[in-house]
Image 1 (cartoon, rainbow, N blue to C red):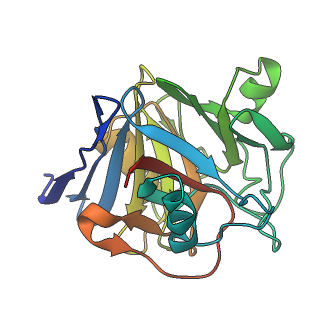
Image 2 (spheres, rainbow, N blue to C red):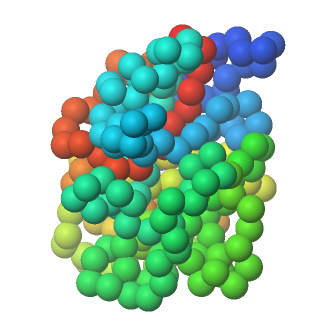
Length: 245
């Protein structure tokens, strides 16, 4: 049974349109998760990596200050995929229509390369989580895209390597997309969880057919309406909702 701990709706007028972002914390199978639901038609969702001088934003606070010059603010943010020590994206990265890192195919020993992995692709009004090989076979138009891995849920099935008795536990975050692509749901666990537990929340709790893992121990959330902005090491790609300040 789900337990609603906190519900917040963030509404701000922008050219006459309301922001529909909602964040809340709830439990599933005895574990606590914080989720932020983004309405792809109403919310201004973007990816961020570097500032105008080519330096990684790194932190939610730096990105929020950078948005201030244009009268904007960060209403929600989370890390959005794995990165190298210089903060550059490990896999495909597209920001505002510009590709700065190409698609990466093939397995590796890291979580990123635990195939199948995937792409979070989005643009005005629609989002998708696409398995990497399917993306490579028929690349869609993505105004924004970030590659990460592993996939958590693939066509309603859990990743085949996730085991019910797995023992590796971390704070984890990821994204799932509704079947019609109209809603993206970002989740961070509020305690250490296994891959299996995390993926089950997406499939059986949120009932999304596709979901993608972003990262583990560095996972962080910025949700001012929940009075939360997690500190930590500098990040690579950040995904977030922008609203008028």
